[in-house]
Length: 219
Image: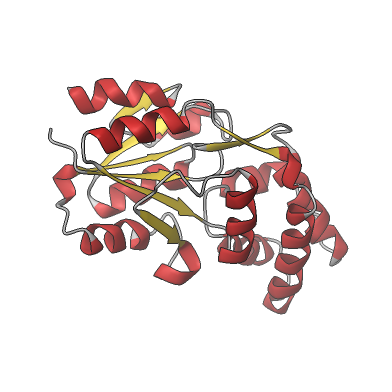
């Protein structure tokens, strides 16, 4: 398998949280601020998707009006921005990106955060010199995960074939995104979601740290 392109998920894959419950708590408080009590479990099941889609889907499940989406999102984004110190770099990210670049493999980063929030976190992590070839913002490319729009956009922009591509992520939505695009999927078991739920989707490869990608690409 000759890999020429890799799309990484952002949060939970290349970046992590000091407090892994923080994003959940931001969601819970954002819903609560608008009079909607939701469970941590329903948020966890929806992780990895575009944030607007998460809020809309949860409101639908709770039979709440969709006009609340914008306000809940604004609250969530504000809470997130006030918690920037919680975000840290996965210790293996810089090394694996350097490895891929040495092999002339195109590297991409995909996220369900809106661009302004993504850029605040990205700059907080001091990644300006990381040199990602592609940044995918779900709400800008079309539909968010598990839809394949970001992958298809990257494939098109770099003239890559599906059998030359890997999608790497830590959620069910990431695995389904790759499968919906028809590319190989790598699930990193970093604790964002229950391992059994991720493995149930049968990713092509399973890793526990990003450096294990070297063996997959070499193979």
